[in-house]
Image (cartoon, rainbow, N blue to C red):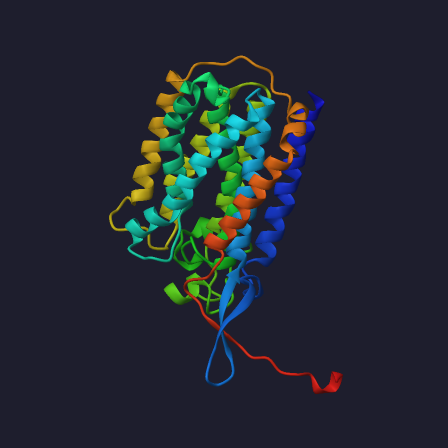
Length: 350
């Protein structure tokens, strides 16, 4: 059991350093674009280029880490790796599609994403997918999955991935908070030395609101911190085989904060006093409460060390790398910025 707590402590240490470094560097202009790829030559000799973003890299990294957490927890709780791979593939594909489609529906814009859409799609499909896998005949060679531990592993992995993934919003300058000068006095005093100032005209907060270098409430950092703390607490309950508590904590933190945080954000999230995201978060909380009562309890010990031989198999590593690369290519190609590149010979080095 010592390995369980080493794993938990390691994730907490990594998350703390990762969040600190993200808050320190990512709001800077330098950390929006990762690379550019020339794609079309212009008449003036320059090249029209595709921008690859840190947003895509950070999102893909967060999701890849969340996937590894899921595999570690589910197989550590006794789930068959092949069944977990099948389950997550079906849930993740639906989530990636919904991440864009739901945001387009709410905001009326083509080139945008929302992790909330992915959560809802994945959460809605998880139960029927699990039921389908468990109902497959023996000749399919797919072992049944323990339902509550797999649900808990999924939501714990999501909660942590949502925390890590909020660093992508720091890089792009999206999901931003209210200007600090418009907030209550006690909040201004509390965050005046810990606010965000986003640099660069291509940050979303700059071109959408004109708030470049304006002190704003650091909602992305607070969201990341709460998800990472909540996810770590849920992880500890999971490792102690308290699957129902782990499930409720991870969903409660992610969806409860989603509802509350909307009051501290200024980016467009649809019309109405309560956004669609807030209403959906309340539905998700009710759905999680219902699932907690109907899913059968499972008594089993979680042994993280026992999961590593399966996790380090080539098919698991290849699946995770493929998923991360596809996510990067899906979300990392900037659709709202453009660039030109010129090349010249360094005469002093010939």
